[in-house]
Amino acid sequence: MALAGPAAAQEVTLNLHQMLPQQAAVPAQILLPWIEKIEAASDGRIAIEHYPSMQLGGAPPELYDQAVDGVADIIWTVVGYTPGRFPSTEVFELPFMVSDARAASCAYWKMYDSAMKDGEFSDVKMLGTWVHGPGAFHTNTPVKTPADLEGMKIRGGSRLVNQLLELAGAEPVGMPVPAVSEALSKGVIDGTTIPWEVTSALKVPELVKNHTEFEGPALYTLTFVLAMNPDVYASMPEDLQKVIDENSGLEFSVFAGGTQADADAPARAVAVDMGNNIVTISEADAAEWRELVQPVYDGWVADLAEKGLDGQALIDEAQALMAGDCLNATGSL
Image 1 (tube, rainbow, N blue to C red):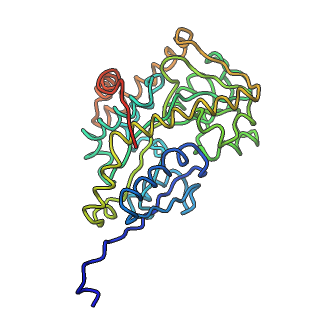
Image 2 (image 1 turned 90 degrees about the horizontal axis):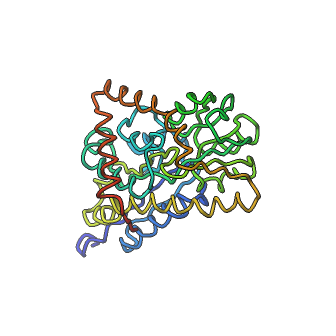
Image 3 (image 1 turned 60 degrees about the horizontal axis):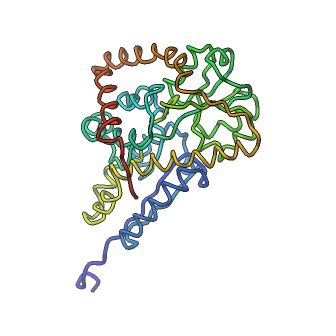
């Protein structure tokens, strides 16, 4: 009898897995609003269950493969947690490369869509690609010049940041961002590189009292992806696939990168209100730092050449997009 009537609208329940606590800026201001938008646009036919703080198991570096293997339907992760696997994305992680998160997130999506989609990311359904706001140093002693880093144990945000730290004489320590609080509190590290927006959730201003930021191009940025298992996407009715598609892509990526960058200011204000010491390096004074990292650029271009990729062409393309079509990018959710 049920088959004789109109077919009931198919409903889909998805899970979204990521590493940060629910109150952090990315889940609270980007992922949860996106979930709400998807559910509303589908008239409730799509339900997305959010699992923060690695609640589905595994470690942050495993998130991407959880989407590939179907352990999770959708994941948000830091691309650099699997160093060397996605070499093209590292163009946006080069030190002093990115000046604006919206422009960079726009350029990232455009470059993904033109080349990475059928290459490095061919095993997922991509929903968004973006970068965070300017990375900064948060340390137990002040950092004004590269020499100030000598001998310090610093958590690096990516392999390219780790190379910068080594050039300055610091000891880079690799760890996913959720481990930073405990490492600082136990003295395992003397400081960390992260953007301002995540410092509040990790209580960094309570654990260190010195912060170093840069005017002009950012010390560094990291690249992120919101990615979906392609088989799960393919199994959905076409009208629900359309809901996913209409709320993903270029505009969403720019929205996500911009939202993450906008969350820097209120988090920075927390450190100011606590009386912490904030060192601001002018663009002119950053010349010493930019000279320091030239070997990072040279080494990266050489590394990509070994993989059959033209690193300098990627740098030129990213810079052209960020200064041209993507300069005034605005995204929406």
